[in-house]
Amino acid sequence: MEIIVTKVLPAILGFVAGAIGSLVAPWVNWGIEKRREKRKRRQELVDSWRQYIENKFEWSSFRNTAMFSQMKPYLSEKMVKELDPIEEGEKPAIHLRSPIGEDTLKKRLLDEIAAVEKRWNLI
Picture (tube, rainbow, N blue to C red):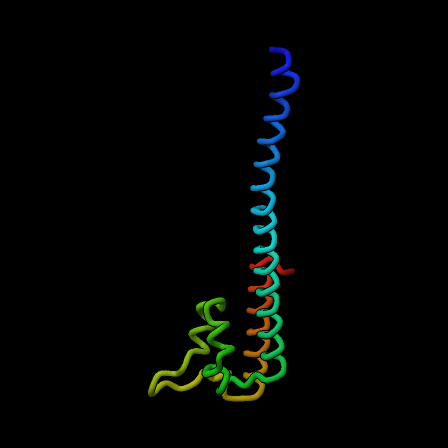
């Protein structure tokens, strides 16, 4: 009986612990890598949005771009309503009729992007 307790039981426990460890470790690493990739992709999205708004933004064509479609789910409801295609017969918001208004919209879009960045814990 003493041999079982001193020799066999530790060997069995060591084998079981090793087997469990070899199954759990890859799963943990996969979870870490998945979160890392998700964070990286989100950062790339935010960077591309910011770059587009800072360099190529023009409100009249922005509504019809893939960039707007990509950003739309993450923007506030108010901003989406402001930027969504204007229905027939509607006029654009007054602030969008001048370059000054476009600059304000550009700034608010950049603020929205910063809010998304904060919500995603990228900053």
